[in-house]
Amino acid sequence: MAISLLRIKNLRNIKKLEIEPAQQLNMLWGDNGSGKTSVLEAIYTTARGRSFRGKTAGAIITRGETAFEVFAQSRSKEQEHRIGIRKSSSETEVRHNGEKIGKLSELALITPLQIIAPNSHELLERGPEYRRRFLEWGTFHVEPLYQRVHRDYIKALLNRNEALKSSRNQLETWDCRLSEIGERLDSLRRNYLSTFKQSALDEIAFFLPQEHVEITWKPGWEGNERLIDALRLKRQKDLERGFTQVGPHRADLNIKFADRNVRQSASRGQQKLIITAMHIAQAKICEKLTGASPIILIDELAAELDKKNRAILLQRLKDLGSQVFLTGTDPIEEAEIKLFHVEQGASL
Figure (cartoon, rainbow, N blue to C red):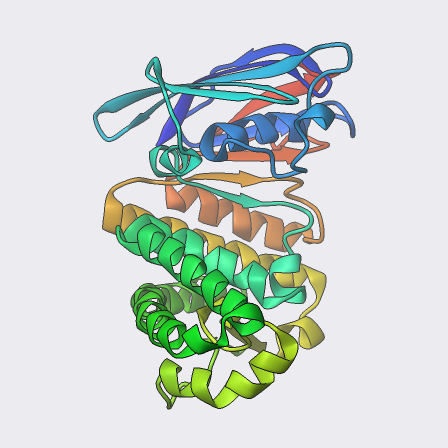
């Protein structure tokens, strides 16, 4: 997947902008507040139908305007894609090749995308939901059944939580249902994880060859017992608290660095390299298993990385072959990188 044309209108400080990116490395450079990250935000919106900087459309729309618009023309394999999005404070309209799209998940399948932003350290430092969300991106793209199974699991979980509060006579029914779907969901995640784990460790070793990193999976209940048994064992405590305490919705990806939790033992620079390696691993797996090469966005390439590690990361991105968009306050003047100078919301 590579964007060949991007048009932005009325998005934050960008009144109107049009660029024709290179198929591989692109860099948006300029002063802080010039609009570099807003360009990444526009690209992200074409892939997810929403911003990565907040859920409120009103904050994204240029002051004095009623809506923002983004158009991207891209190509995957032999197919052309034209994606147009118009978003106001109350309505979102998404079109693909002229036809309306009803589900934003369709956009994600058309344009697989990975983003590494200054707050990406939250993947390692915050709660399990951040790491589940990361793993689910990969599982969603390579396991066709994942979205439906995940949706069914969430529905069963809500029903069991309701039964805990008002319909206790139905608990055994929902325990069986939740267990059946939950184990299927965990199986899909584990299938993906078996591929992801080794790929991620290989990438991390490229960036941090002297460090020992471990990745393990915690499914959300004791791994040596069936989910139905775990649900029954926790039933009384669930009744007391009013919600389900075990299951795939409590799963976590556990990452150890130098035999300790990565949050405690890795510096911010090391964390950024680990996170970047994990994203690159996902991109490579997605391309290998689906044929679709994800677009990669890296906001503030230089942040928290010394000169040596920036050079290592840049070389890895060149080798990857995916379309990459970088931002920074200073340009990286190399033949392989197409530069766009962004100033006051316009590309010069």
